[in-house]
Amino acid sequence: MRDHRSPHHLLFTIFLSLFLFSTAFADSVKESEYPKRIKYGAIHHSQVKASKNSKQFLGVNNFHRHNRGYNKSTLGYFVGYNWFCDVDGTLTQTRAVGEKTAAQLGHNWDTESICLAGDFNIDYPTKAQEKVLAKWINERPFLDVRFHRDLQEDRTCPGKNISYDYIAEIVKEYNSSDTTKQKEQKRVGVSQQIEINREVPIKTNHEIINLRVKRAFGLITSSEEKRLEALIEQRKNNLQNLLNKSYHSPSN
Image (tube, rainbow, N blue to C red; front, side):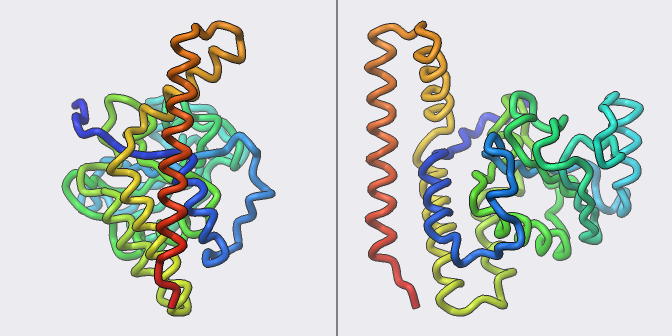
């Protein structure tokens, strides 16, 4: 079924907005250890109800092996994602970061993906899964976190119940060990991310990327060159507005 909703995301604005607050995030995952091409973090769901199967990892591994024909990863699994979080919150790394995945067509080389067991068109992640997902996101402030449906057309994954507002809530909820100042910094950063998500369509960034590729190969027309410069200027203005807001945000 086609998802007719228009996902909104601004690549560099969100990347930099999260980077501004990166000192408040956990640092157990190092940006320097990541291949430079990894830009996105993608969230998926298995689309199998938790009540139907509360232990889904082995089933997904077998399905991806025998039904989808996915290759065996360097870690010994056939699961197409980098990470799989089962209903009880058990997190398993199934593909190395930088290894080609089989998760989101067109973005299997530049994305680190995580799949949560469940059908989130019907249900919500369990509390254990929420805690794992919040930690996974907070440890990667240098990645632009998206939903599967944002990166691949004709997809509704990870389900209609999962929105950026929902993600913001769980990120905030599971930061109870932070200081008051750190909590506020994270709240401001996530709020700005949601605001940009709603205002700027993802197709803007795709258009910029496509036009830059054409320019690199000398295939861009004069009208396309003007369009590219206008889009870049628009993105700079959006970033400046975001930075201006952050300077006036409460910090304690």
